[in-house]
Image (cartoon, rainbow over all chains, first blue to last red; front, side, top):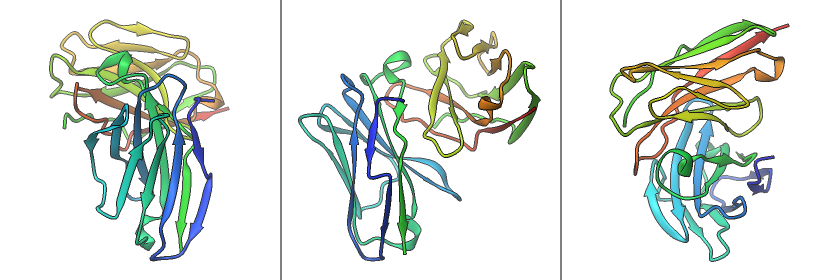
Length: 116
Length: 109
């Protein structure tokens, strides 16, 4: 158990809908990361938050947004869903931001999103 | 983004050592080398990291070449539970992890 909790585990929805994925980081971790893993794209970095502030953006679509709340949990919002958004979405947390030991990321079990 | 290259797949027999190679010829002086693995139906899991010197922990050993252009993750005695995709990642301050395709390790009983 990594200590990172993601809910829900599975989500089935229809095209055009909006969903929210939730992540609770390990106790004491300030940094949260979101990744998307699909069969044809591998694991892709989406966005990073550190202590409530957005720190880095990767391949995140404009239809997707995220935030990190004062209690450090994070939510990833996906809207106007398309078939191609079906994937596993992982959240990870690290104690700090930086390099080496500060950047060791602990991953949750993921949310499997199916868009029908 | 600094790139790493790894073999697509490797096979090992149970209870034998496994050496997983990674090439990172464009590594910069401040890049750490991280290894993660992803077991089937699970999120990636941290294995080990290092900068210049070889590193050991309870899971594995990391051998880093003197010129740092390559590294090798060593599993001393492979078990069936070690069957996973292993990712070698360069960690540069301010840059985000780039997960490549990794090496799919199969462990034969």
